[in-house]
Amino acid sequence: MRTSPPASDRKLGARHTLQQSAPRWVRTRSAVLNFQRHRLPVTKQQLKFKLPVPNYRSGNLPARLPHLALVLLVPFLLGAADSQERIKRFSSDIIVYPDGSLQIKEKIKVRAEGNEIKRGIQRKLSTSSAHVFKVVRNGQKTPHRVELQGERKVVEIRQKNPLKPGVYTYTLTYATKGQLASFGNYKQFSWDVIGQDWPFPVEKVRAEVHLPDQVPDDSIRFNASTGYSGEKGLSYDAQLTEKGTVSFSATRLLMPREGLRVMVAFPKGSLNGEQRGWLNSSLMFSVLSLLVIISVMTFLIFFLVKRVSNSRSNRQDDEAGGSSATREGGSGNA
Picture 1 (spheres, one colour):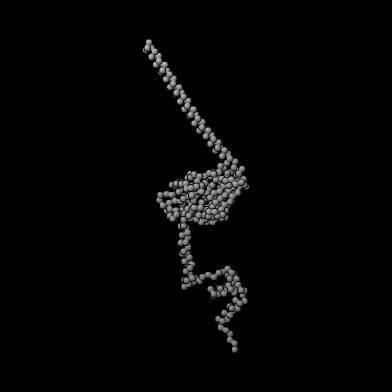
Picture 2 (picture 1 turned 90 degrees about the vertical axis):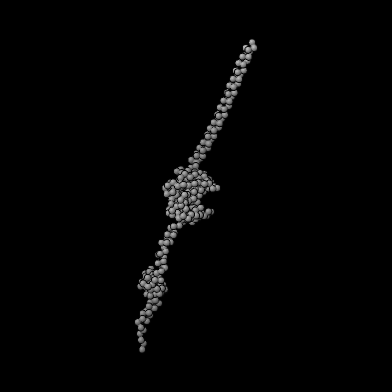
């Protein structure tokens, strides 16, 4: 006599039959869920979107430990990242004048922790013709010194006492000349925005180049590069934002010693003021030279005339003295 299997065996057999009749992806997924949850998925949506989660029931402490450790470590990791010395933002506004000179205003926002940034920062400019007008820190004037090192100007911005850990904003205003080069029918301006000397990363970099008003927007050409010295990286964004203004920005974090170099070109005929400025400078130099020559000649003529006049006066006095002595001698002999 055949006896029916126990209820538990019937239940397992039904479950096995359901798995065998289901599609393969259902059988595979259900096997995983059976292993972890000891139950079959109810619907296709649960299989597709509801992922297995750790069992956090009381008494299952080992399953909780990795997640608890992650929760506890996240604040410390974020705090350590925030305390790293770096440049949080470097912005540069560059005004190009028709004679090729530049006026540049830089804002450098740094995070100081007393490692590399102890009493201030050091800004190495890529030209020796820079003339620094103003240096401030957090809106207040701060001591600084400008030194010439080879073909570069170095601005030392330091105070006597060490800086407290925190965020500081340094603003530099300076000017330089002779930064326009000729390439065929174009004038090109090229500038290393932040330099490649910073020993810590730079989070954000922005530069705006303001060209003279007489340069047509449709004739402006611009390009840039990122990376270490000699590299031509393309991690930047550039666009013509308004009349005669080209905006550049880095699209990623720049590592220590990486930089952003920008290039802007426009037709030579766009800057008539450049030629006039050169002519005015030459004319002024010629006029000054002529005035110096005239002054020297006038002094020499005056000196010679006075000397001749004095010699004549002395000669006349000598002749007058000799004739009076002769008359006095003649009357005595008589």
